[in-house]
Image 1: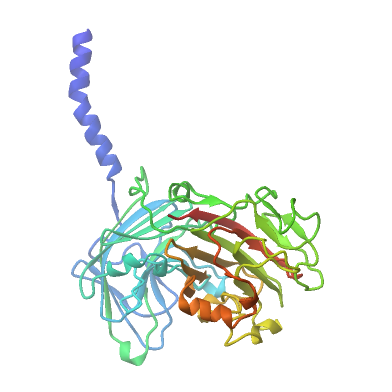
Image 2: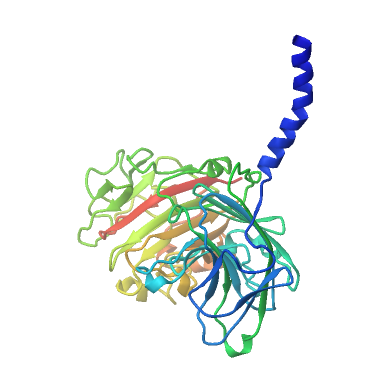
Length: 452
């Protein structure tokens, strides 16, 4: 009896392994190669047709973005297809997308795998169509800009599993977004609205297939991750070396500047937000600034912030507290400001006190898509590398870049309000500071990774 059992196991083992392999590799075709059964046109009237085993879309004048959407919707999935676009024609693949009568009269909205043959080269980035715009521009992952092949077939892969969405182009990892705004929706092919010079251009799609069961994500990698879920740290971010600098609930890890404890008033923690309580708009005269208990030298700092109308605040770094000055503690400052209302925006030199600037030293680039309405959450980022290169980022765009301690930096300091402080901004280590300027400003999702 034992011998028969052993033989049976030996015989069945290859069959079980093969069955498991087939289960893992179960693909369903979304396009039958002959017609557009299972698809519907939304949002515009630019034409789509099935031809020679492909779906082709033709750009049309005076039509808005037009989408060929699946009739079925999908939550967790892995999607693969091939596409080819005429030179300079922008397109995209919608996923987990929707069209609702109550939202902008049925306008298609949701996540989009960007197809961008322009010099910007953001193919594979993630755009939020008709909602929040750019969530993952490829400035976060410059090596991926070379993945797109002009005038050739390109292989696309999208992995949407839970709140994690990853994109790949020709085998290159492009974007990794963690977001839960929409967890299920249709997939759609886009024909972009065009000018007269772009009429009649063709986009091609073929070999469109999807998996929805027994999903196997691609191996982990170290590309930058955008996580919009408040105060949450994914396993992937942890593996990449990030940790929460604020836990979203308590004052742990923070204290008042020039103080031993966290301020008893002037700051509020509620609904996952760390907020300055509005006072008289004066600098550090209510609760005062707060600083990290730990010090940092080279780091990648992420934070979200929300302004009230007319508000002023800032995130400072390399704060030592050795100056013993009155008012806000001294340090390099990522300016946070309502540029349209607060008078500080017009002071300083050539806008070096505006949003995202290195305060009083270097003005930030003003990129219209990176400027959000007051009351919306902004995504800030400060990077300091071992060669003392510093970058300020605002909503996906690098807006300031400089070398700490360079001759240019020293010249700027000598002409600024900081000239009175010896070796300003040049400490080997320092604390991170959130500024109390008397205006209501909220922070959340404060994360950091130490760099070597």
